[in-house]
Image (tube, rainbow, N blue to C red; front, side, top):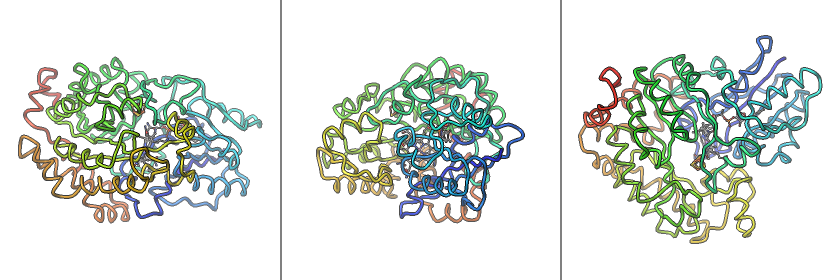
Length: 469
Ligand code: B12
Ligand code: SF4
């Protein structure tokens, strides 16, 4: 069987907001995970349209397309094209899971939820000559999964090649999050076996790892054992976790001891009332300062995520949030406009209140106000969002934020990391065009590796000197 797996480019790839480095940072793993279920006699190719063109003059037996909300239009265009050529077209991922009927108009088969159980079932049915129209995931078990087919990923097209996923979903339930609807009908948080995760890590080349897990720290027992196993491997890694996981016991110190150097943290808002409205009951605003200090003392940089547009937000929220983040010495920030993805509790609530303004999925990119906010106009929400980015990433703010660091070495690391991420766009674009972005891996590892003597002291009680990387 000849199978082509496509990740279509997001709508913004054609627009003014496109940042090629963001999409050449590391490879997503959805399709490589599916490819692992094909047999040795199958021919399979994998195309990530964010980093390479999709050539469409072929006619594979089966075309599998991963569809996000803001890539839905492009995904449907490719699906229609391949159906017209006679291929069997499969659509899966977050958007077909939210709106399977919409996707069905462009597909021979639609997949709802994670694909680890449904894709092998489809392949068996297809080979038997009776493929179904809809497959709905119910069985959630990563322990029986083969590792992703990394040989199909063109790793030279990404800055860091080693993305990996060792858990799926999250134990929490925030109102705006995709995860409850995506994982409906089965477990919504589950992990690989620790020994499997460690074997996969050991097999990856180089030093750097990028965990794509929604919440790597969601199962304390699992990640504690994982971090024990990673000690001494000499890795440098980045991941996502919650404020509460940073403050819970010694987990974060163990993580730092085995190479954690940057953590994506969903602070979302500085308003306790807004947090309650979002159902983010595991976040407490009073904990934020302590969590940030703890991460910085361990030498872990922070990518802080904030969401604008909660019912409690007024037009001062942008400046207040940015000033706070700068004062805390946060290295990078990701701002979002609250977005009611179809299938989420937030979408149901805003639809019931008659506040959804647009159903053009291209605009569901967390940059557009697609609903009527309570405390300001949609236009003001969008302006404030852009202003927040501008204010946080101007050089003056970067230096002010870096000045919150206790040593010159930490200040320089802060400026190098933030500046490289947001201020070197033409340089990254050139490297990407020349297919040379991978050449910056050693420089990136050097910046990540830098750690202070204070950090070494912090984790010193936990680890032996040889483990410090
Ligand atoms: C890598 C990643 C990125 C990368 C690359 C995105 C890309 N092009 O893939 C970057 C950093 C660029 C990125 C950007 C954004 N992202 Co992003 N990203 C992820 C992340 C961390 C990992 C994706 C991944 O590889 N997962 C692991 C694989 C194994 O899972 P999977 O992709 O879901 O695939 C499985 C199933 O979906 C299914 N499946 C998928 N396709 C198909 C196809 C077929 C045929 C079948 C059978 C099955 C199937 O089977 C797979 C195996 O189970 C996810 C979080 C997550 N943990 O998934 C967020 C996530 C997808 N991103 C999200 C968001 C919000 C964004 C941004 C909007 C953020 C922003 N404002 O910048 C932007 C998108 C910009 C835009 N214009 O839309 C949200 C999406 C929410 C939603 N409802 O759509 C997520 C879920 C994070 C979150 N927790 O909120 N992202
Ligand atoms: S903590 Fe993050 S991943 Fe978990 S439900 Fe909330 S937003 Fe989603």
